[in-house]
Length: 432
Image (cartoon, rainbow, N blue to C red; front, side, top):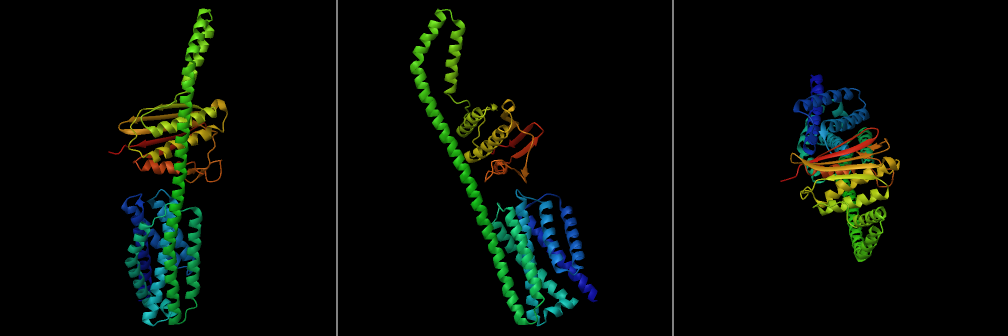
């Protein structure tokens, strides 16, 4: 009979834990697969958990809980940031750990039984397990509410490592303290300690959200500064062009007289070269690119000038599309970052090979953006980001930001490369 209660407690306990874990993930992330995949994953989680439980090594069971939660989250659910999934998985494990400890301690206090007696009796352990599962099912909704309200999109690797260390520390502490509890007063002390850990873990959610918002604000300010700098450069360039054009117009009468004298003297070739020089001067006084979207005009003229400075041949084929459906900030994020990527890549190869091709066109109601450039054939990735050789904060060159901006407009970003060319393609659907 005791075996029935023992195995019943294991199956029920890990079954409810796996169910609550999947509910956590379903509420916070988008699933990748059909329902039957998650049923199989739930069964595999329960079976593996029971196997690890049979080793009777408490820390090994906890390590399995952390790893299993992270793997299930990362493999079966979608998120722009895998680190966020890992963070949520570890927070779930901490919730599981604390509720398990609280349920056992509360049961020992109200039943008047010692912890050692409860752990050695299958029937008492089964009843205690029922309390644990009831608490898990009752309190996971508020935890999901907290996680939804205070989301931390910018969680980094260091924060993930900190959470893993914290989870292991709390586990070891609970294992150690539970081994020295011998009376009710000690159980009450441990309950106070456990609830303090719960409060601290919830506070971490708020803290990580604040850090995430700080990083997002810094990134936005950097992009705003970039946009303002480009606009300032563009308007300064326009002012310079205007002054130069006034001087050219002022001298035009003298230029025409010189041309007339050259033709009259029979110096046709020299007159033609002189005329071409005048035309080149006139071309340099106007922007090389112009379309109905002011922000795109500013961005492309700024990047064309940078290409000229570095000897990069840039070919721009842009249909005059109405980009009013894209926020100016997102326009800067998309075009400026991608062109900066291409310019930096070209700067690392010989001048003869430096080439960028930008194409923007509309096809079947979709806006397509393609930027193709030559590069040195070597790419270094940090997850979704290209690693820049500039160092410092300039890591990833904005591909992650570009992807986030594109997804706002139901768009997709694809990248491909061979030994000679790197290309980014974007497909967006204008919103009604």
